[in-house]
Image (cartoon, rainbow, N blue to C red; front, side, top):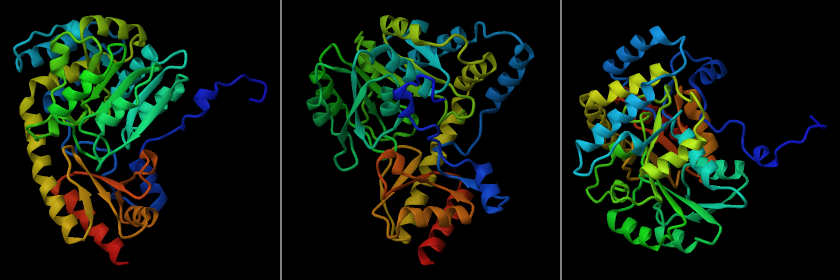
Length: 372
C-alpha cells in the first residue's frame, strides 16, 4: 500500500462502528444463549405480511430491481396522505439501503469544497463520520441536559454551513425537541442551509409536544428533509430500507447521489407490504411502551440513573462502576449492551428495550455485575 495514494478523509473513518454481533459474543465467551440489547432493534420480528411479500418476490430475484422502488414510494405517499390534509406523491420520497445510505446521499450532495455540517453531541455518529468522509467538517454542539441545544446550534451556523442534522428523538439520549423549539430554530436557519430531521424513532414517541417536521415539507420548504426508516418499529433492521421525505425539487436533486440498484426488489416489496400491516406496528409500539416502564422500575430498584426516553432504548448515566467492567460482566452473562464511547459518552451505556424475558435477564445480569 505504500506506493498508493490513499484518501486521507477515508482513513479517518473507523472500519467498523457497529455493536458487538451475537455470533462473536457466543464464540468469545463460549455461550449458546445470548440476548442482543445493544443495537436498538425491534425484538418482535417482521410482520408476516412483509415476510410473505419478500418470499414471493424472490421468484424474480435473478432480475435487476424494477418497479418495486416506485411502488414503495407510491405506497408511502398514500400512507402519509391518509394522515394529513396535504397531498404527497411518489416524487416526495427517496429510498435508500438503510437510513445511513440516505444520510450519505445528503452529505455527498451538499458537503463539498470545504463545506460544514452541524450536529449535537452526543448523537448518531454517522453525521460526523460521513461529513469527514467527504472532506467536510462537522461542528458538534454540546447537549443541554441530554437534549439538543437548538439555539446553540443556530449560533454555530457559518458561511460554510451546508447542512444541520437534528436526530429527533435523539440517539443515544432518547430525548426530543418540541414544536415551539423547532419553529424558533428553523426561523433562524438561512435558506442556504439544509435542515435534516432524522426521525428514525418517530413511531415510539408519545410526547404530544413532539415536533412534526413534515409540516415544513408540506409547506414547500425545499431546505427541510425528514428521514424515516423501516428498521425500528417495522422490525426490518436486517433488510435495510430507509427513506427521505422532501419537496420534489429536493428529492430530484438527491437522486443524483443515489447508487443505481441500491436496494433489491424483495426488500422493497417487503417494506411496501409492511405498510399495510399497521396492526403489527401498533402492537410493537404498545409492547415497547409497556416494557419501557418495566425497565424503568427495574433500573430504579438497582439504583441506576437513566434518561427518560421517547425511543426504544434507555441511556444509563452516572454509573456506579466503570463502563468497561459493566460491559465485560454483562457479556460474560450473555447480554449485549452498548457502551457509548463511540457516541462521545465514555461513562454511559445504552440498553435496547426488549421483550419481558430479555428485560428480566438484562436486569438480573446487571444486578449480578453491580453486586460482584
